[in-house]
Length: 354
Image (cartoon, rainbow, N blue to C red):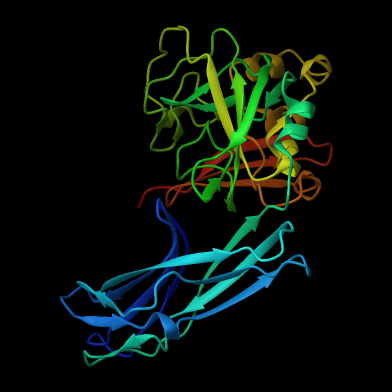
């Protein structure tokens, strides 16, 4: 379950009922979830016909809509209510959708003490246009590629490997379900890494992985990031205590999720790292193989270990930024600072426990 946006409505006293509004992506699809605080048994109803939903599209030709999937009153049990939403695509064109929703006029206010409702919940998602999987297969299946992160999802979680070695695209197919979270973070934990986005009808690209990936345990990640050894990012040695696991054969097949063909360049490259490694001093290639980001490493090699910070933003814009920030569980985040030549100045975990 992914909490996409959160609006907190403040009451005027401790007795006021405050309302949290948020969009969530569940197995049932997009959902608007409402939760009241303070946490005490109350009963109320939500009238779906009075939910206010506004939709803004990046493509002027797009006219899809997001509406409640049901129209009967929904009881609020223990101060919570979930409203399933239904997307109607309209004209089939690719577009980003920015949606806001508020239940301020939809709450049937039986209990006393409701605070005024204010900020709306927000969500941003992508809807692809018409596309030919057959043509896409002709362009990509059989190609050697280097996924950014040298990592892929597997049936057992995820797998990583020597970032110098390529994978091979073997097929592409529709992802099951209407919606999917397209975040490139197989080498990170669920809550740690770059920013992804929600997409309607994402695709699965299947990969044949290098012969002997760097095996890691089934959990794949620790509290402060990737737990495989050597640690990646490798500048935060103190946070990893897992001893080096034995090298053994990992999964032979993996996969990546993509929203549309334009996203492929944000997730993998067809260029080997050979040339970039050739122009580095001895320390950088050694660290690259160990999946460690060190001072002096070119951005081109760093992105092959951690991917781009954002999947919903043009890589060209991100390439120019002097700082890359990867969010994590509070209070931690991971950042990389680059100099004017695009070389790593420092990389570190940010934040500390109180």
